[in-house]
Image (tube, one colour):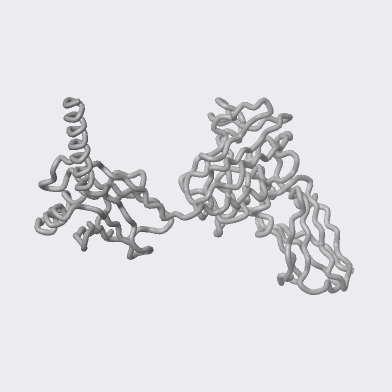
Length: 379
């Protein structure tokens, strides 16, 4: 009985010691984000008064402060520049350039690096992610159209246009585009890598170039590799949803544009072979021009216009699906008389053929042909 009583007394005494130790232990420090916007600061709270007094009295170099409390952009080990002070019952860090909204930051507090700190068990490293990004916006940008838009394109096509529903961000485009044949095999190096990518001013249309060295017959890349497109086969142009838009968000979905390949077109454009359908006098109906094969939609709007007596006729040119026909709608009703459809020499088809000059035989030197004028009458 005496032994049991003694053990009970010892057990009770040990419990008192454990409870006293627990009560004297400071609460675990916490990292808090105070404020918002450019004036936001990071604080470490819950430190013992002795630690805070020591930090207040010491003149610590910035490197020591950064070991005690390091704030960095998430994913980077580089500490942010800023000022450290002891304010009230907390260590406060004020970043030099503010905490940018839309980004995440990591704050790491290591109490063991405080000069003169003891070896108490509570001194453990504390980490916190300060996420200022808010909820991610919806993924709304998508591939809107791909040109040429017809069911088949020529085997010697030089360029493709990709239109997006909203402005796109910056970064290498070819990382997100691939060409796959009808067996599911990825075509190797079909496109021309360029440092200065070709975008419309509003960054909603991207020009994708096939490697002209593989397209043009008789030169080394063509002899070694052949054309990327083979007549009679089908292909898919895959545009990855990992491509970021102008808001930094991925595309809404991966886009697949399927098309067949027709024989190469290696003849110059011949506007005299176009079929013109003149409008009726007094109407605002369209002048319709139909081509033997599709033309380049990126050039049609700039290379074709209507004139009368040397003066431009105001109006709007629209391109029909397939890019093998255009319609010119006048701003005012047609009046009887003679007109011309003017075609500038810059006009090309997707294979690079121009009026009077085929891509396969275009060479340096010689004068450029002038505009072509196709007459028509309104009666």
